[in-house]
Length: 281
Image: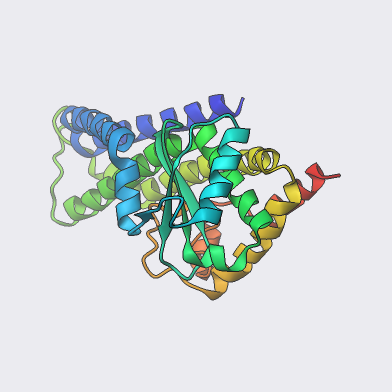
């Protein structure tokens, strides 16, 4: 059922993007939006993992360079009957982690130096289990496509703003966009895109928590880790965190900013912890 809901949300986001292109540029705009959506999804499928890892300057490590981390990832991957993902370390003080890759055979797990400093091996196992669950459920590809389309919708809304200001719309509905619709979309399009992206990300976080707890072997490992990560993410900022990729992390790297909390792609930590603790009863 979760997969069906996610597919419907992604389809809604894509159709909304195409409709917005039509509202801004008529049939030509709709065609452009459809082609652009296809190109974005192709790029997201093949190259998103490299882009995200490069964005955070993640360095791939071997077992000799990070034996404890590597051992945890390998043990849990074997337990989950998954291929061994590539292992990366990000030199950042904020404790956090994310997974990326288009499928389990082409996946990577990245953790910050901060998370390795404050978590016990058991807690780190809970976090790695969570990321492996994301990989197993193929959440990374889904989230990346959603983020890409949502970003494109926001970009179109900005185009609408400039076109509206400089009179770039034409009155013929067959050839150009409707300026009234364009003005409304300029305001509500980014909000709608964000809401759909949040719906996808939040439902997937709960599923990854549950799956990760089973992979790690004890839900309390991840519950304890989330408590520490929530506190630390508010105290230690991640200076290079990008809102477009914040949904990939196990906790929102921007959660220390009050405005971001209102539009967070992550469900409340308290609710996540409560669900994990209920699993252990």
